[in-house]
Length: 349
Image 1: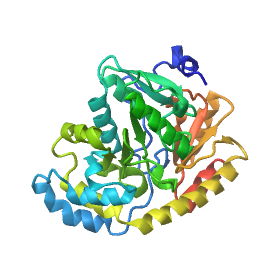
Image 2: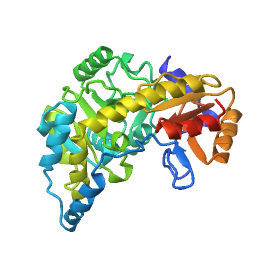
Image 3: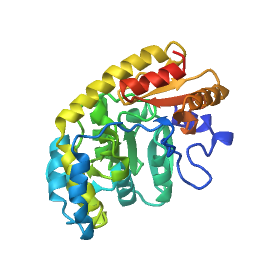
């Protein structure tokens, strides 16, 4: 699809889609303890022993953390398969995204941004005084990156859930490098796809989050991976204490829980297939490599009906109309088998 076609698709009444009146991007999750939350794509389980590690690490909060984060860098590097020096600790995956854009983008620049995708990309680009150039998410790796300061790819993409072909993505990364365009590759959901990371690829900044796979969104632990001069620029630009001591300690612990990651990936794979089969009886369901499914309904009004029906059963899902280019969609997370059963029963599928 032509980039201008994507941009025009939701101009006018939908021009502000993805950013509310306060200037912030809508996200999933609810703070209502009575609701079973399918709107946020976080693991409902955490690694065994996390509470014990966090409690033991709490004393670290009484002192400034070490600015080198050696233990965390080592664990993160082993986790994604890169060198420890290439890891830049950040406050969650979004911290890595902001650090990259504020370091590599200047006012007046343009940045290739996928749509529909995570709404924070466009917001972060605009915060740098630059302009997002929206491209259909299926075709972002086919674009000519020349004359753009950066290009953003979400792999697997949120909210559609599809992952990119690795060789096509590598070829795009090479074209970006040759053009002097930074490729920002958000791999927040890569843990669930069982595919190798592009961390350590020249000219690429990989953003990773501990939020999704380890079920700890409030921890705000993540990291970027970059090489060479790009890595040096990010490391110089980051704030001295990008993560608290307890977050770094818990993050290090989680990154070494490989059996937990494998078990989670297998559970999500099984449950996602089961949910898709059931949900397809009533909705058009996009194939997914991520811990969520995107449902297409017949009309925008049907979204309100579905969300209302779910709420009657104390269940909530993501109104995906807040994503650019979507106007009759709902996104549902993949949780435990019992919880997923409640969602399916509420939808009568």
